[in-house]
Image (tube, rainbow, N blue to C red; front, top):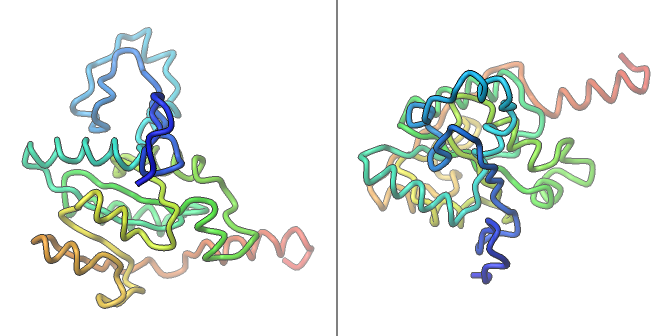
Length: 214
């Protein structure tokens, strides 16, 4: 475990700082909009939506504390992970389906370095904070966290989700964290991806247009 670097929101278990922007009129202790204090009309007009989206990005240690509070309230935590480099409708439908299995959805995304190690030097297209902010803008996503490791196992063990969700292109034996979640009494669910959607195909098409191929 790495020591805490400073007192400004850095996660002692990650090099990625929690993005925690105070928003007047809101209780930022929970991303659940039903627990937010109603802002005044003036505050509604001057609060950019991106602040609320970025506020869902949490470091591993802070997120673990928030999830413990949710579980103490009897809430079921759902976890999924991925690169989510260029968000498309297949991703959105997958995440909406994942959220339906519990009360709060955590999306863990690979860091930029982790994406490069998995997909090559030309990826990711968007930075980890940009990817996290876009995911945070979805109403079905309650929290986003970033992990450096090749797999999310350490994050799963730290956050202890009640439900682990993965895309249907993974067999149950291949799902990272399955043994840990099931041994704790949780569920592991595979959701089929929507046909016709792929980040790689989008990237290839953009590159083809740029090169005059399409």
